[in-house]
Image (cartoon, rainbow, N blue to C red; front, side, top):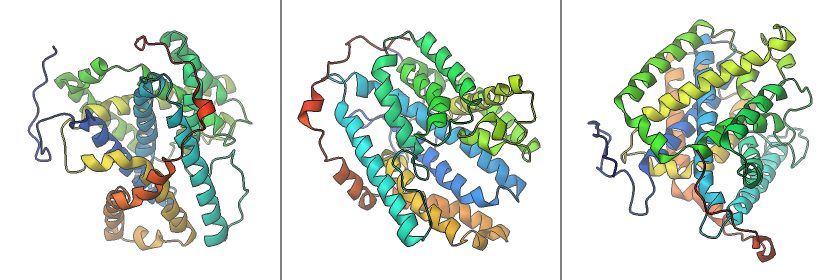
Length: 367
């Protein structure tokens, strides 16, 4: 049995255990809460990134980390979807589809009838930040197929497709195709990741690397803060439509995405290496990040529509207040009352005739 690494002293630790009685690991809930806070914070500072270089750096760092890492964690737990006791957990996929269409309809109605905006009604182009759910549904549908191939072929093929999709000017927000391809390697990396590999993040060497790489990234993003291509980080545009990237020779434009992968991968490793393993005061909120991801978007749309950002941009006190308001909002939206609608949506059961799928092969995930 592998010896447990010595737990570092931390005032936020409240227990010595690394998981609850049901086996749910605190580590991942800790990571998910901080990541969803970065999502909310990045949206809060988004209106300022064009006029304030430090906010541009903060936005770029948050966006380079939070969605790739969240997708990595989703891929890690996709093993339970594919290799459950009864085979493929089709009900889980069906639940995501129900939540996506419900959220898509709700956001569209909010924009049409509350904000009075003119929007194209479509269930194929994800509204707002719902692209993550759309991509997750696509990856789960593909997973039983790609699981039949060796990991090295899937990772290499996924990486090459992600580089190539940037040359396609038609791949964009329709079914989130561009983002689906670009983030696919993060999802599969999480899927192929094992508990043994996660365990290596708890070593002293990993933490030293995490600190050094984070400082390096902050320095690079600060130096080039005015030249960071925003659309490259959002992963939904072709190379030819991205500032600075389109200035490169066409055959070399893919290198910009290689650089994105370098920083995103390094920041994922660094972030996870610095994430507490034990239960903290915010652990329980990390179990309900999906509702925060969807619900905060309504506030963000109103935030932009009614120019609420003007109350924060002009003073230092206002900017600092915005950071704490984003944190408070993350806590509030993570509470149980806001989970009621999502709990109701999860009660929708898939028709029985669709449950008759061939069980997944019982072997462990190849590494």
